[in-house]
Image (cartoon, rainbow, N blue to C red; front, top):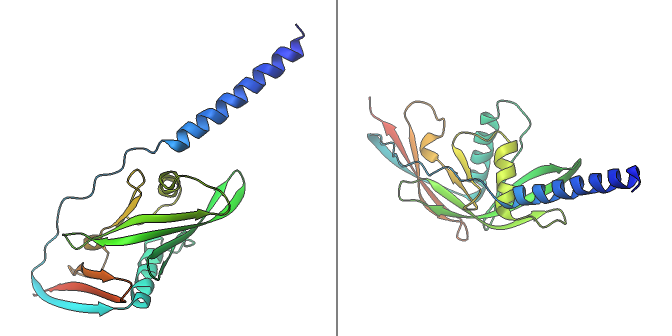
Length: 190
């Protein structure tokens, strides 16, 4: 048999094996971090704060920007009827817009869990867990945002937001349809 035919079929086999390995890698998300089980408690004066979607959107993007320490903002949060994270993903040299929709859930400890409801990546169809895994691995997100790709959710640890002093923030209600967002802020007494 001609040496060039052997080389061609050998190279073709390597390329096919590489594509299959890439698809298998992208289709199997790694284990997610467990949700933090501790609950930070603060004693002091408790204030109940009502916020609108616009207020919360502005606050969230400000904290994300501070956590990025002046770098370009990789993720923008938009709050409408649900929570929308907008980012960009570069795949094989192409930059694609990524739009992820989440339904917010207030946990018993006052933190937020964003459960993914839909996903758009240009005209391509990727599994949501794969996109969240790529987002987690390629973007240096703040410590208080934990991406759990396998569960298709993002945990927002409000108790770890870097606010001044020992101020503690908890979510009480999060009804976006009614534009009724209530936060509880505990300011320690000296």
